[in-house]
Length: 121
Image (cartoon, rainbow, N blue to C red; front, side, top):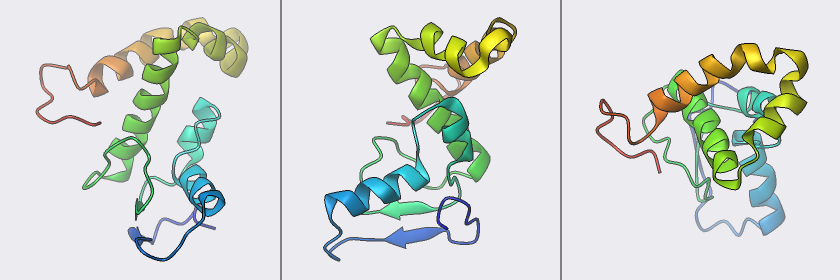
């Protein structure tokens, strides 16, 4: 239900004894890094306090939160040298057509972009 909920804006979990399994499930609802589609389908309107997503989304509108999550996934894959492999798997024949758009998004949401004044991580 949390994955598709757009009404809930904040969820505070501090001090409630959430187990590692619970944190993993909540984290996946908010930021599922299985694929670009799963990131896109994740909840981008709710900030969950008390779990670590390794990305700062506080105060972001859903559109920016989604873009930051996609950037985070592509950036972490790039560090491992596996972006091309995953793009080919996830987008099949259309991957080459989308590469310019993907790179544009990576540059736009990069913390090193000249117009960025704050860090996303």
